[in-house]
Length: 363
Image 1 (cartoon, rainbow, N blue to C red):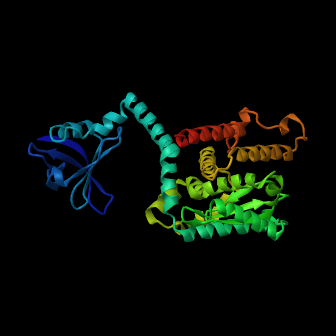
Image 2: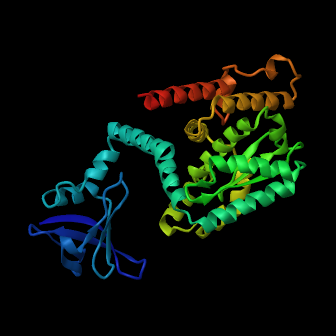
Image 3: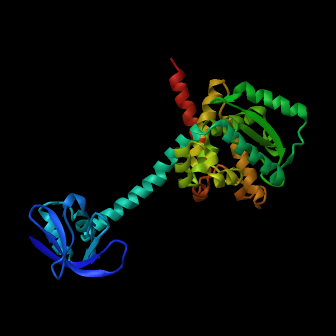
């Protein structure tokens, strides 16, 4: 029989009584008052809850009926439990050894990094592919309304010209992974300039400025294929979900993006104001290159208009035409700060994909 001193609290009261906790050799626990009166037990160890040791904080032993025994004699409790529960002090051993603390800290950092770098994106992709069409339609429509209200005007392109381009686009791809693709044109001279956008519901928006920048319709078809790649890979929705780890989990559990009202409300703004990651841009580039090659079109035309778009962007940002900043095709540290891969990198990707395609297509 082993005896540990402490205090006993009766259920429902804060009054404490000086008492002893008795451990017998058969694994039964009893609480007695200092005057010998029995306050709780005897109870089997299986029926009693004993808190794990954490530093030097008082140990709590909870009996059936919510009676509580509290003691600061952690060593005494450990000695009594050692014969019955050999590994009960594992948590205390881990938290009291510096090497284990350091290992746990590093493991936590690695886990958090892996979750952010790989876990969240993987889950976001899975969730984005499972989101119902109605949710995609709602968010895409909201993004287009936001564009029309604040950023773009009605297209100045003749209707005949718009229909001509739509016909050429749809002859390449009219359905992106069971999502019907639509094309709209907008004037964005005071906002985005020469650009194109893909929305979750299958809408691709071309600006008049991009149409004017292109030297051939085939270049625009290359951009169209790139934007369809964003749609097929659900990049808009994945981008939104990755911005909120909690949203990813909630949508994964409920299967309904409307279960996260704040995300639904903010999604159109995130789509309009956020760029895609480098990995998403590479995925869309690869999709476009493969589609163009399958239709016997030259993917280098996509690279040429990308270079022209970059040159236009740099010059619009305030650098004089013909200056060093208005030239493209330069690898620099600025490329690594951009959400888009550098144009040189994208051109190399096009060449690599073309070479790989020729190797697989050759007899």
